[in-house]
Length: 395
Image (cartoon, rainbow, N blue to C red; front, top):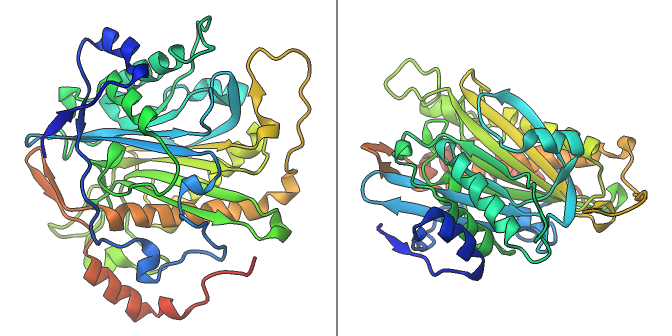
């Protein structure tokens, strides 16, 4: 599908003068009938999802994609996650970062770990697009009303390497694409699969992509919402809610056949919650998201960059830029975090499944990567009896 020129939104003026070129954005593709995990009877864990079963179930969180498909070789894009719709630099959210295997690039992570705050949209793209993405995030932030005196911006940008299906050396992602993704961001359903930063990714030997899921805790556990978004591009032996899909279908990183898949790759995970948590608790929450990958059969291989970023949207724990004096915060104590940890494990697991199930077979850069075969997966799930299990605990 050829790219089209994007209309120039007001916030693009600064970055266009820097980049010297217009944004190229792929037209939106129509939805298809590929299922999500729950359509197949997969409902990992014991807690219920939110109404959208997406990171946008956390009030105020917004997601935007720019998908770049051009000619035979460009299969890449940008995904932006906004913790709230205001000025993030002036109204920072607490954040935490956890690293599973650091063969990757998460720009801005050291300042988040040092100061415990996130002050820009979180952007995901391909490995060689990180520099352009940082430039785009910085330009977007500088152009926001109220930021006229800002001289330092900590852009938070993560990546996975989509060089199998995308001509990554072409440096297709430009700063203008990043601003376009940010300005497109909205609430509501989140497009999944081969879209945005997941356009060219591969996971478990099948087409990977963007996936999302959420959990709502029962009132006795605080009633909080946890949402997860993943960019899947990693290897291992796929397991879906305990069903050994990769082993049964003979496609995994260590299969002794021509269907063996690469064990290397990466995964970026973004966790949102409305629970009032401080930076230390958010780092612990991010760790559970990385642990959740283990439920899906991830290898955490030598060549994998496995990162999780977590933030809280709760107004009472935000940090106002330049505020004078101490700030009192009422946060969830450590001994009440276990239910949140369980929720993020479950949501991460399901988000990975959704990224695979919603992705389409993709050809690019001289290669074709098949989508996960739905009929075969459905047969394996039916054979396992997963459909007969109670899915959730009451709220």
